[in-house]
Length: 445
Image (cartoon, rainbow, N blue to C red; front, side, top):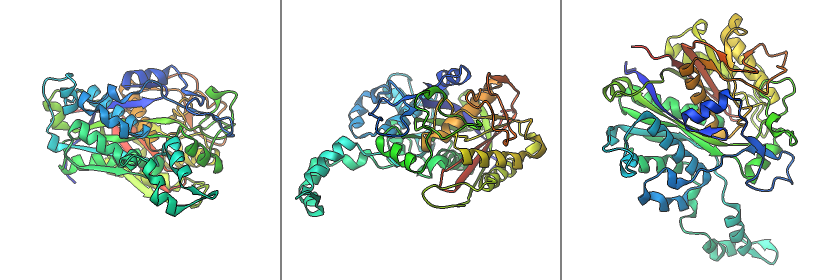
């Protein structure tokens, strides 16, 4: 492996508690909760009626004027990814074609041929109103007719309809908007997608095939299809009367997570490239590990009780970083508030850290965010990088009383000051078996 070092120079979160690095971080430390009764559609027919929603995100705010018409073929997930990428490049002071065309920069300061994009994406929900009209036109004598669908009903859909819902369209639009001609990829592995995308971007820069990469993930689960899918497998909280207390990661009385939307994009950069343009450096990525442990495949996708897949990925990442568990100062946990998954992850953290488990602070932020799938890991990662930057562990404010069976150290009520030199960031796909871990280190020359 090359000795090229990879640093983080830009952070672009788009979340229910705030968008952009500063607003997002302030939301975390102020214990802001973005979970509320769902407003995007009427949830009254569902058992779980709460979720994390983002207000005020419009595609015109994040693309050149000449590209605004493309918003007509952008599903919500795509808009979130494009917005996150814009926040990230702006935060990094990376002058891509987008910023130049918007008049926010005089000239590009990155070679488009050496600029890559790696985005984690989920299952994009079709526009149900648009699809319902076409499906209705396919009904014949009270039953759906494939022949009528092919001959007539499909004509009710715009010819570009499918382009709104392909998962690779998140990365596609980001590459076009920012003129990124380097390595590009889309990863669709549930909640592990973002970590896998960040890890792949890390490797492309290490190998020398790119100097800069926009990476992360985004997804919106704020739609009836995602809500019913998560409800059917028993993953959602039913605390509809107290949305701000509904999601309780590692809490003794946790009963599930909440659907959400959002994501984050990071700017990863080869160290000398970042130095040459005088970039601010948040932290350095030094390790990446992944594993698969389809313990109980099926609808529910229960985790291995000992969290063995997380342990395997984390140990690989630590070895890759040349770091021992004794050097880890913080663990960023996925911690969605699911009873068995939280327990398995806590056991994994205990196995990784050993006797230090009760001493090392754990960052768990989904109390105010819920779980938005493919973008959730990128949001967690952004929070970990900012925690290292600010020397502060954001509180897991809904986690008290902590499950007594889980021997973790959480900042449960208020932010806690902590010097973080090495952080381990974990993610795993609910029911998919994919696990990924990233190790970040405080930047030093």
